[in-house]
Amino acid sequence: MISYPRKITRQVFVGNVPIGGGAPITIQSMTTSKTHDLGSILPEIAELQAVGCQILRITIPDEQAVAALPEIKKHMTIPLVADIHFNYRLALGAIDAGVDKVRINPGNIGGKERVTEVLKKAKAAQIPIRFGVNSGSLEKDLLEKYGYPTPEAMLESAKRHIDICLENDFQNIVVALKSSDVRLMIQANRLFSEKYDFPLHLGVTEAGPLWQGTIKSAIGIGTLLSEGIGDTLRVSLTAKPIEEVRAGFQILKSLSIIRRGVNIISCPTCGRTEVNLMDIVKEVEERTKNIRKNITVAVMGCVVNGPGEARTADVGIASGKGEALLFRKGEIVEKIPESSAVDRLMEEIEQFIPETTEEN
Image: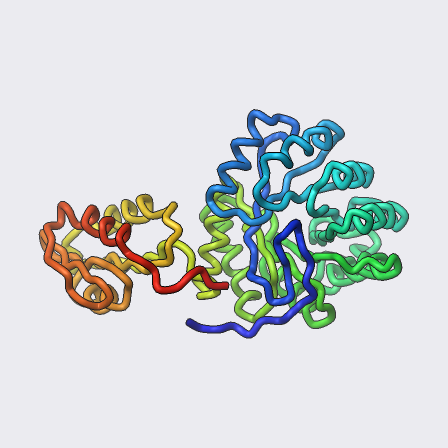
């Protein structure tokens, strides 16, 4: 497995989950239900926890949301983060309600005095604060100074609020520098990483729908992770939040940062393919999406690359006309009819015992 040199940042704890300091990179997401609507948000939380979300953020837009927090917290098995915009008093209420972290936006939370009040409350509660610098909501004077959002403008915004923290002897912070512009996001995080050792939350904000947003996020987040930058992440998609979690884990898996769940190797198909490989791969992907064991599965469609790739996987099939070869750890196990190939492959996956545990 390729090892990426990683910048070791300071470590903070969100509940019992460490961020930074060389700890495993965590996957975050955010609920979409109205926070006060317990009948909607609690099932959504349960679903996100079931697919492996490790830190969950919910919006706190009003006092109704604050009032719902104690009940929500009872149903959490992972740390809970309160997302606050504009009204710093909501942050104070969320901390009193027992959240594990508060996220505030320097561009809209208000002046130094308001930030200081939040810091005092967070310090007393011994919870971290995440400052989310967003290129779309930079302070007006920074936009006037730089003319438009730039990496330097985003860094200066982050610096202002880090300075306020340090003035108040508060260092329990995580920082995010996000943009819908992938290059801007990458450059801003590089600048920050060169100057500071506070843990970084990575994300391409407002990335878009599932397909486009996943690609943008994979490029932005993946580029930084491959350079050793980043301690936690969220893939922001206009899609169900469980897709954000799945995409986040896939980014880590694609960089070999972790082994988690089923890693499918499949060929792109061509005129040599004698089976409907696209449908076969879709079926295998659907049937394995909730399997947590660490396993590489090859689903190949012809004799050119098929057998070789299948041999490098833990289990796999290489299909020909009307039949397929089943491989286990590089050895042919049996020849099976095309009609039962997926079912037989699933049997092998279910029986497979991983040699390694999840890595990060």
